[in-house]
View 1: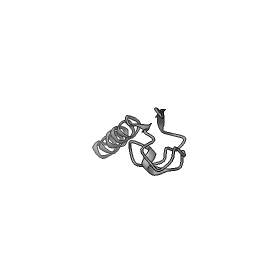
View 2 (view 1 turned 45 degrees about the vertical axis):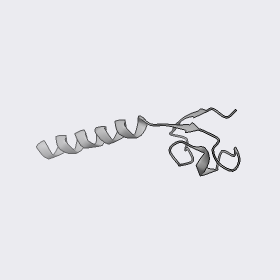
View 3 (view 1 turned 60 degrees about the vertical axis):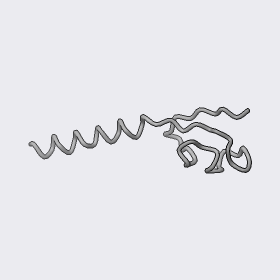
Amino acid sequence: MRQILLILSLFCAICVTVNAHANIGTGDGANTNWNTVANWSLIAVPTASCNVTQIYC
């Protein structure tokens, strides 16, 4: 029972951590294309499960 609770607790902690980060569109890449990795604050193109904010000027 303790092992199950430990595994469940770790899983919940990972889920909360993953969802806590927002990927901000900075436009710092060579262009402002969505798929350009350098345009994002987390240096990763966002997926459907990401929180995204675009601040291109």
